[in-house]
Image: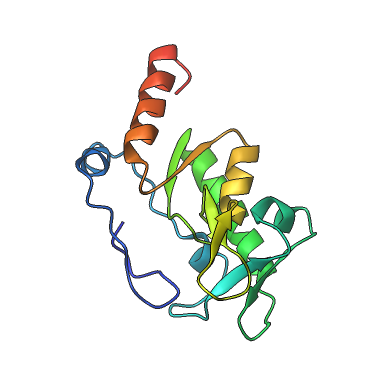
Length: 157
């Protein structure tokens, strides 16, 4: 959403008109689980080792930095806080940052810090999905909008 919360201190705003309309309508909850979980900006890049976000939640995979620091606890804490914020706001559809170890919805980095992405999802995505929130990457705004329209039409949103 344009906030400087990326691991490298940068921002990756979504310039889609639908997202702008959602923001104008007060429908956007801006939240960074990594920062909320206690990680600084900037911070060392982190990747999931041994699985994906669901495996981190289940305790069978970890989120590590390239130097080997285990930051799983911060990622899980941030995911739980994101779920709390989503529940408080009545969120049914989330648009998150693709490939992130927190927010990836289709792919994450493979844990070798070589820039390779593999199918999977981040820790926050896994927790939100377990709670029934439909999660989309920022490159899938049209799909998220269609899902939201369907939920609203069916009375589920």
